[in-house]
Image (cartoon, rainbow, N blue to C red; front, side, top):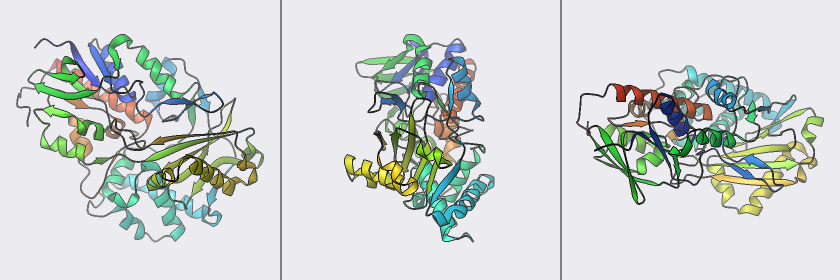
Length: 425
């Protein structure tokens, strides 16, 4: 079989685009196949009700995130500082100090290198010598960050995730002027016509020395495949021969979370006049968080509804959900929050393309071996998504890291292919 290209990259999120860019820079020929009619994956943009383009998916970066900052610099994108001086709000208010303690206990899990794989995360929380407010803060923080019910998680998997996430001075420190999605579009444009949209991959036939990637009405032949899609999306694809059991089991262990992003715009940033930074941390309901999302020409608060709460709110209907969001802002900020000039809602439930929360997670108990298995890959196939990042999994930074790592491993394998030809091992 004569390959059409050296590498097929499946998925045009930041992982796939970063991998493709690195491969092209190394002199490899590449085709990127994206099922959606847009690039960006879990990063996208929409017009709000006032005609302003906003990030409706992933958007934030921080000083410590050098890979995505490097891309922003490469394409001349300016950063907008989201931080604002002032105090945060915790609800109930009497739980403010307890929330700080809960975050501290949660963050300390990153140093727990040998967590008991037989302990459920919620059992660990229950066993803490801490107040009920502190425990509620940990549960709310976990549901919000992981977009899953904390009761489905194992302590070892949570600790492994946090161990790959370096401490941040400010998690929501910057946005990209003109949207993060525009940066993804610029990166895709730099790759020229090798990015194909609306190209749904159905099957990948693997054979010694290459692969045939089947899409509607076409087959793209290559020497190597980079699967730059979330694990649940990769698990749905047909591989012939099937992937080794260790990889199939690893992919099947992931679950996509559920999150809703609600952008609430106001005529004036009234929270600033009260000495507040716009942050609201909710112990109840579990999984709710608010932050300042203002830009130079727009004043806004962004609400993240994560985990089971997202599905509950979605079931109320669009009008009731918007009203409930505003009611919670009124609870935090008073009647000044009762009259927004626009409310934009974007749901990210699990879908066939691997949507859902910011990151997919392994649920249940057991040793956290899935990440290493997928990072190693198999003959002819490498995996790349933010879930597999050695640094900042679940962030756009992690997606870029994963793409670069998969690209380098692919280059190494193309230069020095393994001796084995048993694709089922």
